[in-house]
Image (cartoon, rainbow, N blue to C red; front, side, top):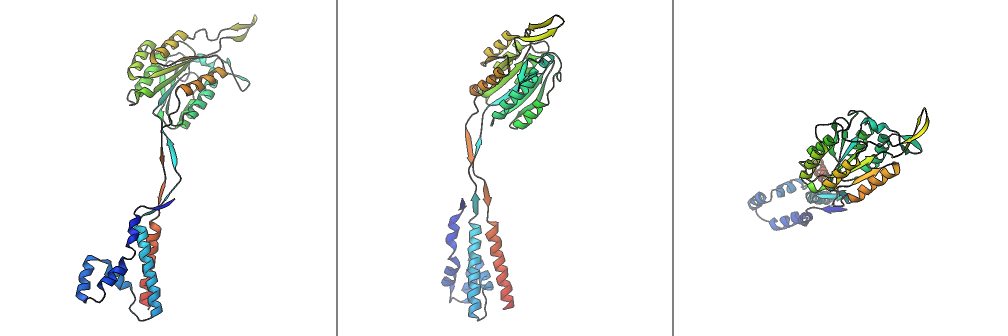
Length: 329
């Protein structure tokens, strides 16, 4: 829509006519004194043609009034307001911690009809989860023998997904430092103001075997800042393995420490989930979406485009044209 910021300035349109009527017929000295109070009177008089050609006077008069009108339009600050745009906001700061230890290469998941390793399935499903978190600040921690902050908290979900897709097994070492991963999340989140909305989603397929910080100690630190932790234990409980003696069924998740993951979630007010296949992992992330919904608090703004330059330029162009015509006349 179109609007004037200072529309009342347009009420000054008859001002030159009023000034002319007010000071018409007064002595030259009084008119000069009046010019001290209304500076543009002399300018208008200078532009007004002095020759006796009625057609030229009428023509110049119209141009003068049009220039004055355009000048007032510019002074009234015309602007164009665009369509309202809603900016979603969320108070959540959500960190993902993904296990890159050697056991994540176990191919006990099926994706699009093909057997894939645990990390590949995690990348695909976690990527969709990140894409749905519009309005949240999302960060990414990758951990193995050590924990690394791959992406700090950011609204740029595409960048987070990019770094997640580039993660490879063994990048952070072959072992599993769950305590260090939680400790790193605490370090990155402890200065955030909205402590009630701090969330960590930790995915692993093993037990804490490395790191300087024990999971129990890390949980204490997490509770101090109000960090809510959702833990996901990933890995099938049955898998066919071929050997010299034929095909045998084994439990590829025998080393998964579910009791530890359950305790981490319980102590921090989160939940523990068990993902034995791709469908279960998808359902878990969908459930976390419901447990931690994207806040719908939003602000609306309208882009503003200033238009005053156009009438201002047209007004000056008309004044220059009248000066040129006056010199010719």
